[in-house]
Length: 314
Image 1 (cartoon, rainbow, N blue to C red):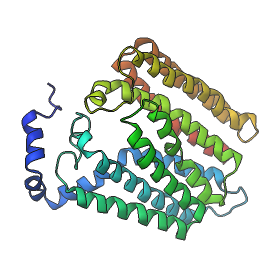
Image 2 (image 1 turned 60 degrees about the horizontal axis):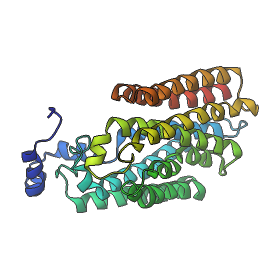
Image 3 (image 1 turned 180 degrees about the vertical axis):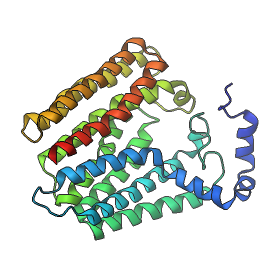
Image 4 (image 1 turned 120 degrees about the vertical axis):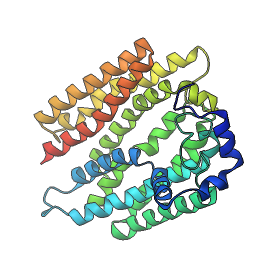
């Protein structure tokens, strides 16, 4: 048992005396727990991809740069994303308590009341959707709502039914650049769907790295993010390498279509090749160390590709 693993006694305390734990919380700890419910580590990438979608979707003749519109876009998107993350933890609180990587989450550990978390998640989601509709446009708000609904009512329940849940989850997960694009231009052009496709394909190797590192943890909680038995390795390989190879070609599409120049072409080709290399290393070795390296490479890859797009446009 590692130091990070909760003991059975600690888990029993969480189950038996949650109200005692809630009462012992200081104000600062409670604020920190509600902040953690919004999954800020995930929201960083959401900010990056939404920002890129906004900058790339903005008409080139638009001067000066609409900073206030961008702030509205990021704020509304983060409100909906935070609400989605909170409601996801509310739905999965019993299963989170069974996994080492999630057992310390505020709701799974019993530090917050489920009813309060539910109200908080709904308030964030509704506020964010209305904010996007009023401050921006109906299309941006609709895309955000579709993201929330498909994530909570399609992807989340499928995690306990089929390993194809990761494929289903990639659809709402790729929405942020579309929201940014819609906020900037009020419509979705073919170029916006290229961004969507890049994020869609990127998510599969990214999540396979996480799923492989925590495969026993997921299995303990009954999540079918990977098949059981001998098919596990082959499934991981398929969902890691095939999307990675497809990502190489799709990431070069903006340059082939004349929407990006040589800077982006060289940069995207180099980054995508490195990403595929780390994906192949995981497929071959099937080790946790290789999965960790792929996870790091994925976190670096996506922001850099989008930054290159924005720099090239500027």
